[in-house]
Length: 250
Image (cartoon, rainbow, N blue to C red; front, side, top):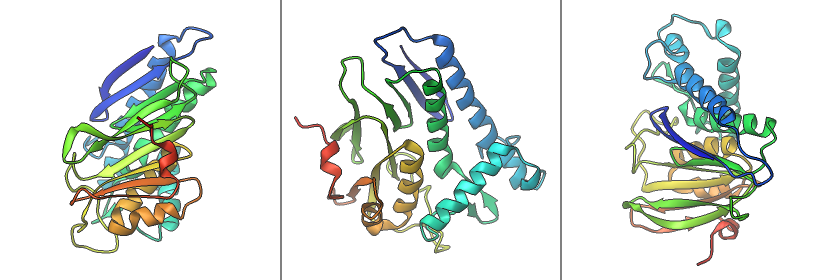
C-alpha cells in the first residue's frame, strides 16, 4: 500500500511492502495524522502554531508541550555536536525546521514499527527513512537529484534500515545560514546528501554540515556510521570513503 499526501509544504509518501499480511489504511492514516500535528505545532509559517506563539512571546518554553521541549533539547544537543554550526535561534526567533522534519519522519516510522510492519519507507521532501525491503524483496532505492537539473538522478542509492537526508539551495534557495556569521551563507556547495543510522540523525547533521560549507563532507566523514555525497557549483562531487557501498551499481 502506498499513499502520497501534501502537507508540511511538501509531498509526503508512505509505502508499506509487507508480504506476510496486508497493510491497513488506518495505520497509514494515523501516521499522516501525526505528521499533520507536527506541521500544526512547529510550522513557523502558521501564526497560531506553538513555535510561532513562542516567537511572538505569547508562550514561554517552560509552559510549552513536551514535544516542543524535546525538540529544543535535541536542537541544543545538535548545536554542541556540531560545534555551533547548528543553531535554531536566528535574529531573536526560533526555527527548528532543520531537525523537525527528520524527527517527524522517524516518529511516523516508529508508529509503523509498533504495528509490526518491517518493510516500508516514509519520505518527505526527498528525506527518507527506509525499513526492510521493497515489494520485490530488494533494498529500497533513493535517488540523489542533479542540482543543475532536478529531473535527473546523478546517483541511485540502495538502502535498508537507515535514513537519507539532503540539504541544499537548489530547490528552496538560500534558507540555511552559518550561525558563526551574521552575513548570508557563502558557499560553493549546492547539495549535500547524508546517509545515517536513521533519518533524524541524517537530517540534523546534513543541515549542520551544509552550514559548514566546503568542509561539511569532511565533518560527516568523521562521524561513525555516516556517509555523505556533496556537489558544488562546478558540478564536482566529493564523497566520504564508505559512501560507494550504498550506490546502486548499473
